[in-house]
Every structure is written in C-alpha cells, then in structure tokens.
Image (cartoon, rainbow, N blue to C red):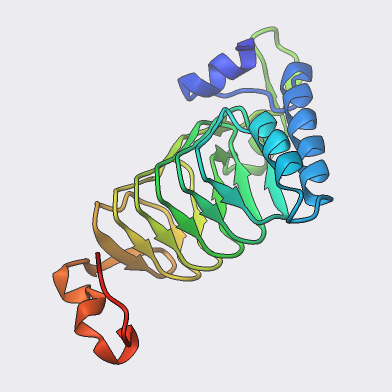
Length: 212
C-alpha cells in the first residue's frame, strides 16, 4: 500500500494526483477499456481481465459492460453478482459488495469527497508547504441479496444492509437498514420488505411457476 493509499484508508486528505495513485488508476482504466472492447461471448478473456481489475471478483459474478472502475484494487465483489450496462465505481476508498447482488443499468458508486470551499478545492498546502490539490474519501458497503434499480447513485460513506431494494433513480446519501425498500432523491426508506411482498401473492404474475 502506498503512502497516499494509507491516507485514503485513514479518511484524511490525500493527493489524487500522486504519481503512485495515478499509476494504479491508469492500470485500471486501461483494463476497463480492454474489457469494454471484448464481445460478450469472449468469456475466458473477460474473466481474465475482470480478475485483474478488482481486488476480489466472486464466483459466477458477471458485469455486462461497459464498465468504468477507478482503482479496482479497492473494490471487493461477492459471489453471483450481476452488474448491468454502465457500472461505474469510483473506489478511492474501499467498496465492498456482498453476495447475490443485482444492479440495473447505470449504477454509480462514489467514495471521494471534495472540499466545499472553492479555493480549498483548487489548492491547499501539504505538510511541506507545497501547493497541492486534495480530496478525501469514505468507504461504501453493500450487503448480500441487494437489488438496485436503474440509475442508482450511492454516495460516500454509505452502508446498505442485506436484502435491500433501492428504487430506480435513487441517490443514496445515508445508511439504509437491512430488508428495506428505499427510493428517492435523497433516498429514504419507504417501508420494510416482508412476506407480504412474496410473489406467491401475485398469482396473475406467477403463472404456472413455483417458489423454492
């Protein structure tokens, strides 16, 4: 881990333009470009690339592509994950996604935060007194068995519990407890997901299918 990465993990200001950080991002960006040029049935090639991008990419997981992953090495994805078109993960800080999660198109996860004051956003001074551009970052954690609708944005520092459904277009700015249906901008909990939501109560949609 580089010195600037240690700062990221500590939650303090770091320099995104640091040469070692830029090298990590360049590698990930180039691998994403390579992935995005593959055909969907080039499964072996895709598997080789995706395992180079992420710190961990679980068994039977799949990303449709195109993808845009910032660092890659800061993201861990569980088993049986499905990410639809245009998955974006700006993983300055760690991003953890559990097992059996499904993301609709255009899901974006972001971790970096920039100063609110314009002059501070432009430049501050480092410990040596040198003009430097800084930001900081907060991790994102997503539990198991979550489903995100299209165009969901997850903001820095958010934890989403197991079994959640996040409605299309939601901007998640705060933690969401397990087994919640949440939606909106800013995202808020609409209600708890219960047995009443089972497909068994929708025979007109179930047809001749059965539950396990």
